[in-house]
Length: 127
Image (cartoon, rainbow, N blue to C red):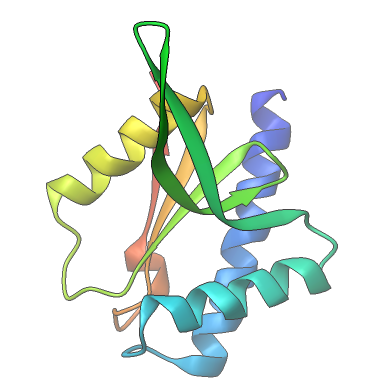
């Protein structure tokens, strides 16, 4: 997928996240935002999978499920959802690792526990 198409996809996902935030507001559990965002993405015709298990290989050996993606949008964009007081460096590192291990180029880290959702949306690029 070229960068423009990936950027367009991320823009649509952010638009759906804004709709969820506008409707629900801050302060809920991450799982509530996940379900609502999956609903919005589906309503907008955007393919999404939630709680995607990713099997990992370590030096050629399958070590089983090593991670679970909150959302995988159109098979190309990882969305990691949070509902925390403040995003910490470990949240960024977690998404960077997910991107590297899945060979995805772009991820969105979205924290719904903020006064302005756009302040809680961070793009993370692999590489």
